[in-house]
Amino acid sequence: MAISQGLRGLVKGPSIAVILVGGALASNCLADPDARAATPGDLFGVNAQELFGEPQSTWDPQLAAIAAGGLGLVRTSARWSTVESTAPSGGGHSYDWSSYDAIVGELSAHGLRWYPALEYAPGWAAQASGDQSPAPARDADFAAYAAALAARYGPAGSFWSSDPSLAPEPVVDYEIWNEENSAVFWPSQADAPERYADLYAAARLAIRARVPQARVVVGGLALFNPPVVQDEVGFLELMLAHRPDLRGAVDAVGLHPYQATLQDTNTRLSLVRQAVNGLLGPAVPIDITEVGWTSTSTPEEQRATYLSGLASELPGSQCNVARVLAYAWTTRESDPLNPEDWFGIWNHDASAKPSGQAYTGMVRRLATQPLSESPSDPCTQRPAAPPVAAALPVPGPRLRLRLSADRGHRRLTVFARCPSGCSMTVALSRRRAAQLIPVAHRSTAFSKRRRQFRLRYPRRARVMRLDVVATGTGGGHTTRVRTLRAG
Image (cartoon, rainbow, N blue to C red):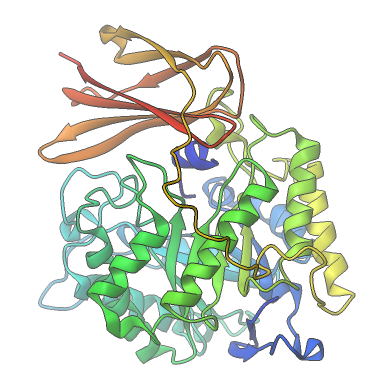
């Protein structure tokens, strides 16, 4: 689901100090290894948004494979726009749960639990019309939807009582939005941290009024990637500056640490862990609600190594990660130029890819042995490096850029190269008033060869901005910005 349709390609480019056991938080008391008690089904899961876009007749073998792989959690979007397409009448909300009843029913039949990401306001409730992922105009309307979802699918929810034949797998985790620090999923980023803080607080209060034991999770934050994604740590800082009452009132922080390698992923996770420790306290867990590697930039054998390594390292580490949900079970695999189509770890015929086999194999292995300290802990505290006076910035790589526009087909082709090598991200946005609305995003791994990006833009785009960021081996950045007119 998420990025990140597009941004995942850009950016992508957990000892459990607190874990969930039977719906209640239990400290693992890092000094006492015997106190670690969680099943892999509590900890590991997978994103399966694309699966539920397929005919329902294809769901059963895939869900059976997820369950057989030891994965207990399945994350999908819980779109408000799907459930409440019309405005309340006479002050009363009317919800159509049929789409999610089908999904939750199939999940529970396989012993799987839903991990919903609540997002996407319907048109009548949107802050601005025309946004591809509209934020809500009124927190109270969204909070009412969140409470209604909890009342239906949470413990003792009306969905479970409506069908006694189901073995209940009630929803415990409620993720509020998805990548709210990204203009793709929250288009107006100018006041996004403050507005999101209010939304999270209202939703948490409403959900916990229905399900007191619920874990209400800050929506998975994307990693910093200008100009589309603002800094994930800075976003949290601004949230808490606006709503200091959230200290002690956040159940978990979602994170999407997409990076080129497992080592890079662990490095970013460690930095975010340190930030959460300082802002919210070390007892607040991180939920990795999306993480993965696309086969367009990472060989399948390497993807298998990374996913199994992630599963093996995090449970016994000091990262205090309570959920790991790989992205994604299946993806479309239709457009060779779109990385978003190639994150799947399972085939459409319900057979395993090496990456999926490695991930589920490690999860099953963990089910037969107690969790212990990780031999390679990505979040081990290290002494702070001594300050360096007047450190010079690392120079960015030389970047050559050429553009070609096909206005008839509304297509922009970008030719870019770093003679000494670099990784690149490309973001095309259209201007609407004072906002930048994302249109297309691409990324590459490190290379010395010339790269070609084909970006399509909508008919309504008149003035656009192109950002190309090249990153060299030393970490220095070179940025080129171009303003383009479509007319």
